Length: 124
Image (cartoon, rainbow, N blue to C red):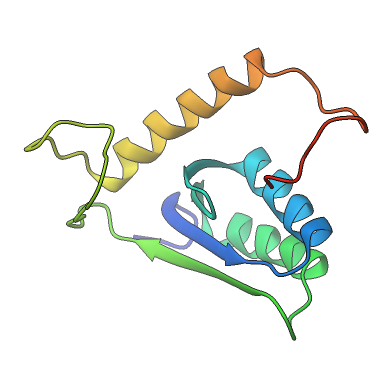
């Protein structure tokens, strides 16, 4: 796979301070799809990923926070425990899963009201 082709990335984070957490979360929602609470699936080529990481680097405190991006191969096994959104025996490759998540995230954003200063964002 060439550097200019889109890849699926798993971006996860552990941010200690709520304000930085909200900023990182908002930035990743613009570019990726939520996989779990602190994990996003991002479709990007190497240059786009470098630009995203540069943006995120300015939002975190490297002495306190942890942010990681993992390139996922096109076909990789995924083991899931606990409540899942798909039936047993159904497998979707990383690229297709990311497309599905991005479509769902776009639909969710269309139906979501804009945040206001009065909103309780403590969950972020």
